[in-house]
Length: 364
Image: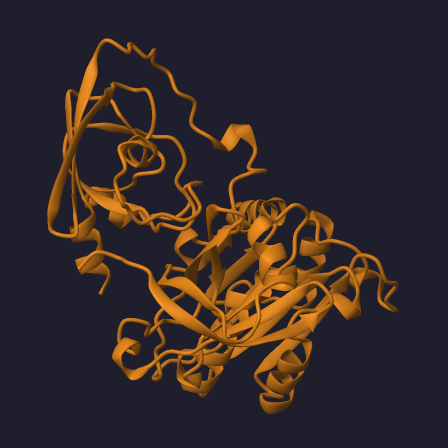
């Protein structure tokens, strides 16, 4: 079955900070299995705003055990959906919502004692708090340390809930707040995280050898700083998990350049299997990614970020060759098994066949 949107009623709209709103959705029994999720996953929301379809993905902040479906939407400058969610949307309204997706998690193991470390900034706390709650509840011997960066105390998203977790798991959960626009008594916790602060953290608060997994979520600059640091000090890549918001400010050095010329007279036959149907069209070889080319042909395909991050447009390459420009969503084993992100895959062979249905069936 292909991924699809479902009309969901907004159960409540609550402010967690002045510029961040928590949206809760009503999920009836018929959709409960379709909307079952793992800690750290996200929902893709769709709305018609000023006669334009807008899609955005937001992480679920409850634990799967909470039987709740909530996302935090932080208002950003010129953000169409975030402004709509914070200023227009109200309880009782209906949004189109795609079932949960995402791989920003590790499996729970109730038998093991594990130690986790998370770095979050701003609204990056939303998937992280779901991960924290789940592992602390289901792994009775595991520990979690959270390093959380915000501008000021008043901008800390889900602050009361975080304090509640800290009080509940006094011996297994530690939380350290970094503020960029308010002075703190300890200099270490003033300002953004940088390499010098990471050096101090790993000498005083983080035991690299005993930490099983690291989670990072926030602005891309922070994510790559911490990710690169962890790799430099010898942390196995498999232990480092990160969730990007978008690819807008990813350094050009981390992007793959196109090293071929486009000839509009040479066409690629693109075949897309989705929802049990075959959709076929031609596009100039090497001209644009499969998703954009298909959308121009009025294909109805699943997508959200279009930036190689969210994996909503994940599909299996059955035949042909493509050049993948950016990938921050697929794991290496998925790539080895032929999966691509169609929003980043440019056809370079005479014929390409991609199967969205194979992607969905293997995720369930």
